[in-house]
Image (cartoon, rainbow, N blue to C red; front, top):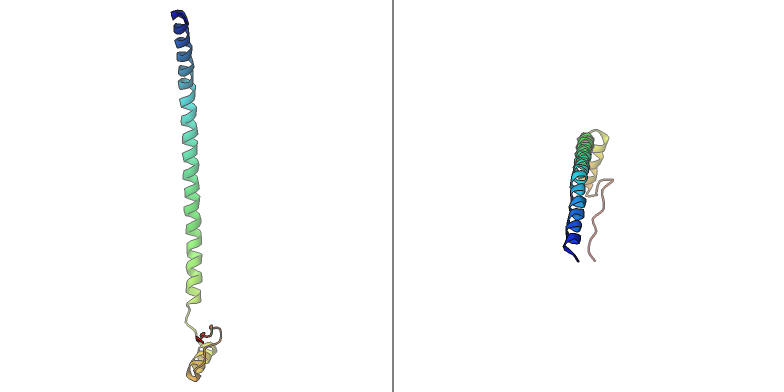
Length: 96
């Protein structure tokens, strides 16, 4: 190859690389910024949904742990006094 050909090749490569730098980096920056904005919004929605579900779950837990009264408590006390398991509880499995 002649030395003129190498000079022209270097100029062409320089032009291609400079065009990629001039147009590629701003486009890449825009894509990265939009990606992180989307991720931030996704995390915000996730946090909001967890905050909405958390009080409902807490209400369900406390509703199940409410003190028993009246006829239900009396029937459980009678069953325990008789040595039986209260209604609604799994029977113990004895080995053998």
